[in-house]
Amino acid sequence: MPELPEVETVRRGLAPVMEGAVIARATVNRADLRWPFPEGMAARLTGRRVLRLGRRSKYLLLDLDSGETLIVHLGMSGRMQVSGSTLGTFHHDHPLPQKHDHVVFDMEGGARVTFNDPRRFGAMDLWPTNRTEQHWLIEKIGPEPFSNAFDQTYLADALKARRTPVKTALLDQRVVAGLGNIYVCETLHRAGISPRRLAANLSRARIGTLVPIIRDVLSEAIEAGGSSLRNHRQADGALGYFQHRFRVYDRLGAPCLTPGCGGTIARIVQSGRSSFFCPQCQR
Image (cartoon, rainbow, N blue to C red; front, side, top):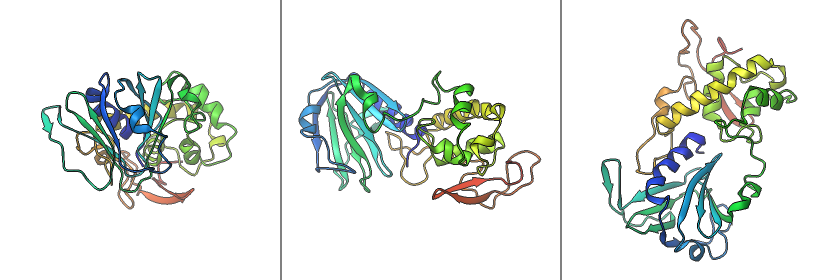
């Protein structure tokens, strides 16, 4: 499932053709994805100007001049693909319609944005813009990792009473927004913290070191266009490249990249998810 860097990469790719532009025609090709689409969604989107294209955690937020916000979740296989416009130095013509093109936004000026989702775990909803933070998908999400609200004091307080492994705690979207399995594994390796360690047993000083590392890992991943393992593509169809920088994720049996460590990457399962780490240097 796309994590914060992948969703932010998609947002940045869509902004040049959607932000400030009018949706000349919205086409909805089915009644639902993970959940039913809101009633009359195509009509409520058609003719509306996108005032702002934002992101909250793993959700895209399209603020419209109607006073509504289109909330988009890509799910496990969802992609938003731009055609009929020049992105960077390449012009992308409109492709032939595909089986899983579920929602299509034809923008004034000729650009088209197509939401394609083979597994249909994605979601879209329309909600009043002034109450976006009260939407049931968003209302319990914790602070954004790049925000001022996410600092050493906040994270130490959030983790101090959690008798769960630190890996599980950091995956909890109520603690911090947008972190998923890949980037928590990478963060804990850089911090030298075992994913098995109970969050409550970490010192405040050690928890504090996680904040800048989380930001560094996410920043590097965004700059690389995210991680393309199965389904993630940028808005122009290009792959992300952060997977080539993985230190532990999906590197079972490979040598640890920490200088002087000499350990080997191991894998355990926590809460149904793979945790990759180095038993030698992560304590």
